Image (cartoon, rainbow, N blue to C red; front, top):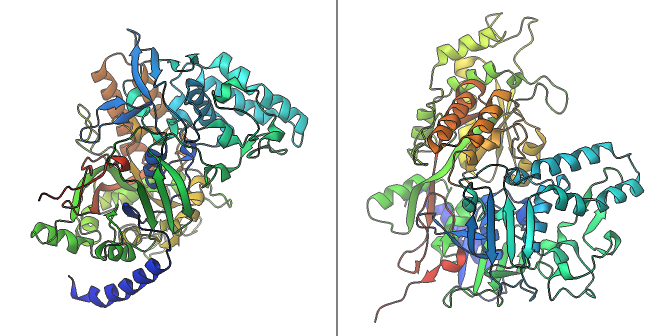
Length: 611
């Protein structure tokens, strides 16, 4: 081990011991460590990998992935059929499927959950997942416009509009329960990756009575659709906002004691920023040898997480970002560490530009000009970053979609390192060194605004990349930058609000198609935190969606990504993510090595020791 780390690791070992003494609960059968905090256990509101890992444990979608090759298999839906034109899908749900409280899981649960995802009131990042369903986009627009037209502070009008939602959804959207266990889905156009999407957390069903907090006196044992709906006033976790008219949903339903799930596990314990405990769901027909209990520990400090693994406190370190990561990989290469596992992931590390003309506080935002974004990309030496900053030798990329990750699809090369062209673009955009001080000014002599680079403090990796960008941009472009470090929770909120100039990002593909990356930059997408609005790019995505031939479709998507990464530059891709995890293969099996990084916790097995 690196000699400079020894004193630090001794100190951290003592801290780990304190943590162990502070936890009176019995040891879990399987313990994993996460450096990223879980923000929500509400599937429809998820967008972070750590959250979705828990969704896969607590909930079950219509389909699931075979995590060795990511082919699809039945889950809640035991079978399905599709029409010859690919526009009508019929899913047959398992009649024995139950929620953890014993209620049946029905097609009505799926439809209501998808309606919840689609409602603007939910403020979900992935509402657009359902826009290919017949009438879904129209329903979303109908509710959005209705909210905009509601008189402020008119609770009566808001209540009257809310009462029309169920009928409007049934009339407009191509989802229908043919019977309690048969779901019909009608699409606007064929969706080749539909089954893949249906395994994704935001499309997993949730239990309406518990989500809304129905009175316990209402009998839902035959399915809530057989019961009389309580009024909004009777629902503990729902209220109408008198100012906006939105149906507000209290997140307390997704807590121990109130969360009802249909997956392999139930939630028994959650201490925010500390740990989450899961127990096997007696209503789920899972493997007999699945772990009966799982503990998810939160370690904001990556070195503490590493020592927790080294001391045996945890069985699986889901992502290693400790300072000594490159040393660990070197030891693995020399055959000294079999517990270290590294693989290129279906993910890209990038820095996001705010593409709006002004910042939330009214300041001019120079990155509203695509020429400025191109210039900063061209002034970035990515090879120096992976050689001297991250030191993991990650594959460089000028595209958003990882090269070679999707059969038949070739992403563009993007912009390389060309400081001379970068400086010419800044000159063309009106920013030149007019007084010879080495810094750039506009025609009025006003200096280029200091570039604020937002990053998360939970990982030294992003702080160091941000510092490297600051230095490179100063040297190559003559602009100054300021690093702004934030806790992950506040960082996420500011990114969503557009309260940044440049912000770090990492995007994991959610399904096996280029759209899982490209849709994030569509003008209407809930994950479009950079605020890009490009009609040409949106139109190419629409053309691809309507294309009949698979090859022609991929060609259109490649052109869309070229426009994105060589002209618009809403984000600066740095490299493909190399995921480093730690577990002992002699102790556990069932751990996936696939770049998609999906791990079903109930598929992990202790290794059987041979006599």
